[in-house]
Length: 446
Image 1 (tube, rainbow, N blue to C red):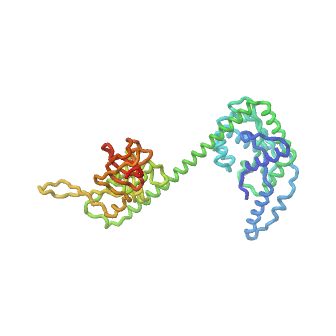
Image 2 (image 1 turned 90 degrees about the vertical axis):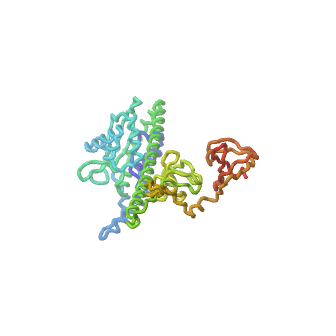
Image 3 (image 1 turned 30 degrees about the vertical axis):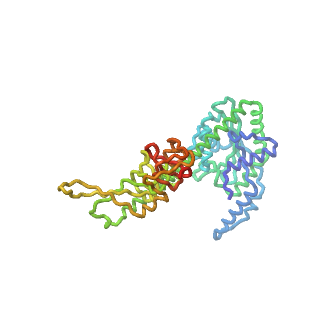
C-alpha cells in the first residue's frame, strides 16, 4: 500500500484544486496553509489490489470485488459547521499544542508523524502566538464515528499583528474508548477513495477557493507580510535542517560507542576465559612501551575511520596504555590518548624479578627482552645509516616531521651534505640537521 501520510495527500489535493480553480497558491503556504485531501486514483487501485490479495490468503474469507466498491459514487454529504463538540475539542487542543510547539501533545493526538514534521512544529512554536479563530467544517467519514474535518483558522504570529487565514484538513477517527484522534496512517484503499471523492464535492472546493482567495488577497495587498513569511520559511527550514543533521551525528556517535563497548566486552570475555595453566610463578612480563615498526597513522579512536591526529615514524616509541582485542593499541601521543593498529607496533618488554647480587644485596635487576627476529624484518624497506651522509641534489625544505605540513626548520642547498639517520619507505629521509632529527623528501637527496 502507498504509505504516504494523509498530510502528504492533503498537499496533493490542494495543488489539484488550485490548478483547476486557476488560483495559484504561493510556495509560502507550506508555513501556514495545508488544504484538503487527495489520493491519486492509480495509487488507490494498487493499494486495493494489495488488500484484496491479503484477504485472499485468509481461509474461508469471502473476498468481494474491492475495485467495484471503491468506484461506487459517494453521495453528496452535508458540510456541517461546528457540529460535533468532541471533534471541535480535539482540533482546539491540536492547534493550541502547535502554537506552543508542544510536540508531545501533538503526537498524543496524531502518532503518525515523521521526525522532520515534529522538528518543524517545535520550531514554528517560537513564532506562533495563537490561533484565536477556528471554524471546523465536517463531513461524515467512511467508517463509523469518523469525520473529514476542514479547519478554517486565523493565525496570530508573535512578530506580526494581522491575523493570517489558513485551511487544513484532517481525517478524525474514534478509538475503542470513544476518544477522537487524528488518523494519518491507518487507512485502507476504500477509505482513501472515499476521502478523495468527498473532498472533490462542490461545497468543499468552494470553501477551499474562498479561503485561498482571502489569503492571496492579503498577500497581494501587504508587502510586509510577504517578506515576513518568506524570511520565516527560510529561518524554519535552516533550523530544521541543522536539527536533523545534529540528530544524525548523535546517532552515528552512539553507534560507534556501542561498537567500541561491544568490542571491549568481547576482549574482556576472552581475557576472563584464559586457561589457568598460563598463570605461573615466574616474573610477570609487563609491556610499558611500544615502538613503531612502520610509518603508520595515529588516530583519535580505535577505528580506521577515526580522525587522524598524527603519524608515527619507524622507531618512534610510545607509552602503552592498553592493548585491545579488536587489533588496536591505546598509547600516549603528544601528551594525549591515541590509537595505533597493533600490527604496526613492537613491544619493548621488561621482566621484573628478585635477583641476588654478588655482594649479597637484594636489589631488583631489570633485563630487556631481546626483540624477536621477525619484528626486525617488519620495519619496512628502510635502511639505517651509521655515520653515512646524503647529498642534496637541489634546494629542499628541512622539516621537523615527515610531512609537507610539518614545521620548517630550514633550507638545505644543492651540494650540502646531511648526516643520514634512515631512508624511510614513505618517501622521506630522516637526517641530522643542526643537532636535531629532521626530515627531507627522499627525491631531493642521494
